[in-house]
Image (cartoon, rainbow, N blue to C red; front, side, top):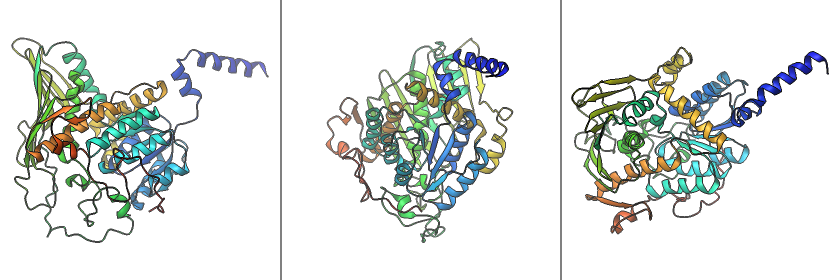
Length: 464
């Protein structure tokens, strides 16, 4: 070896040896192999931020919409360091059987989260799964059980826990004791999220040729195809989600639980229904209230998909009331107002277009929310750190399960018209046989519910 090469090599070895074990591994290992199930709107948002924080190698993409998956493959090829175009699949089982993955992103519609996350961890991957965990309590619990059984790391996409200005609010206000004694919080959403089209305005039709509608529907009840549903409009139909409770309350309930270190609610009650948009195709509630009772405090939820917000500055938010002051939290900012004399505190979302210049074109082309981009990046970094250290991430599957299942049970309490008393040790509603019989939904054959029986090996379908 020439002297200059020896010196250069020695210096490199010395530099590496000074790093922590995790940092050392990041320097010397091959790029993590990543697959994405559901590279639609939020699938792209999540994946592009993952690429921004680490030079991963995206090897596969899966979606029953061949147009969507191929569009995403071209995008990834233009953005990832290798320039490689990922392989595309229409069936996630085929994707998992044909390629080895270090990480899987599950960004499919809610009704698919359980089966796909469980299949991914059983295939040996660590998983970043969008919220909510599942569409019923037992499949959500099955996701937690699968993660623990396989010792895989699972981060749920409740990224408020990684939002820079909310971390600041937690540290400077909550952890600093500025709120005093806390006994009440209010969480809300006043966005007009129900699709208002009527049957006459948007009739059922045959699905487009590029969409495998049977595969897209999966374990959910089979409905006729409708242009409202795909893409993104599926959130207006209870067959595929848990309504605004499961979509929006889960974020703000989870934020409040994280801020105040709350576990399971003791009781859950809820009222509401479709009170205004009765002629719409959407079948999720347009008005709903819920109360989650924890030890010594209540968290109260309200959503109204019509009219004006109660506070136009905080249309989707959490407000925590303390004896010494009030803290308002949203994806855009926070405000702390002390009771009486004292210093007001506030903070805003971190917009990082100078550091991440792709945010601006991604906003224009892929609907990236600039105020959320920093939160996704932080959530991905927390996930990758947990993967390296084999520790629980900030939004570990157990925390996602608690927040998601609580919202699911709020819908059940509304349907039954009574308060549910939850026992987390047995995962049952105390003294309520009817409620317990509805902790799982029926799966469409041949799909099998993971919380009721072992997942059968399904014959593979051709890619769509």
